[in-house]
Length: 303
Ligand code: AMP
Ligand code: FES
Ligand code: ZN
Image (cartoon, rainbow, N blue to C red; front, side):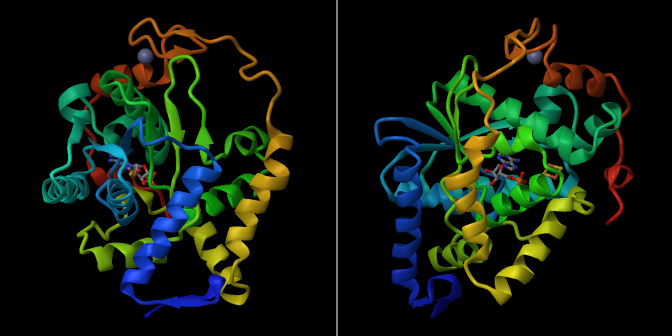
């Protein structure tokens, strides 16, 4: 039996799978994420959320392929890729692969040092760009990621703590397509980490359990711990925090009229950017010209 305190309910295995599918269906419908006619590219890291999402979307009958990015983060990346490939093979599903070191000449540890960015920032920038590129090149309508309720509540918590009003205006489960950018969706926003882990266990999905080794000092882990404490005392708080934000507050932070600075095409890759060269191409330039950096050298201390 799986007990869900925030729903005041317990489920056996098959009913839990049904519950999980209903939550994903509800998120897709409520936020008009995509239709069965559209082609979806789900970004898979080899972890429970993204592999679980791929499995759920296949089960619900959507046209969905996977995308795996090899980030060059030592053994962690090797293992992540192995899980993603094994899942694709087990379902006879198509996995698109992009490899940062082989295709772009750098890995995340080197990119972070070369660009003087925190590893997660160089990684996030690379992922956003390459998800979009792969979707455009493959003719997909939408990119789906495995961000779950814990992820979204933690990011919201961080943005509220600092009153990052720009980010608050853009923290949505669906980002519509704009010139040069495909639509991005997060169909797992109604499910938390524990639920996704349980789903994978019941469905027999093998996934990488280790966290990224570069995320040691990542503030979001601390925010998740803090929110888990609140949730333990008051089940349903996390859901209310995120969904009441969407319903009642998020529109207040949205800038009327979209981009204030006009966008033009990056002179290298054609992506929309405010400057001559986009941030991704600038990162590639710096990173591919610099000496490779060992994994441990870029780790940030725990706060
Ligand atoms: P993270 O930023 O690591 O929390 O990951 C958030 C989401 O980004 C995951 O649920 C995946 O959908 C996607 N993702 C993360 N790492 C990769 C990767 N190496 N390749 C493809 N998608 C990824
Ligand atoms: Fe991007 Fe860890 S997955 S820095
Ligand atoms: Zn570019």
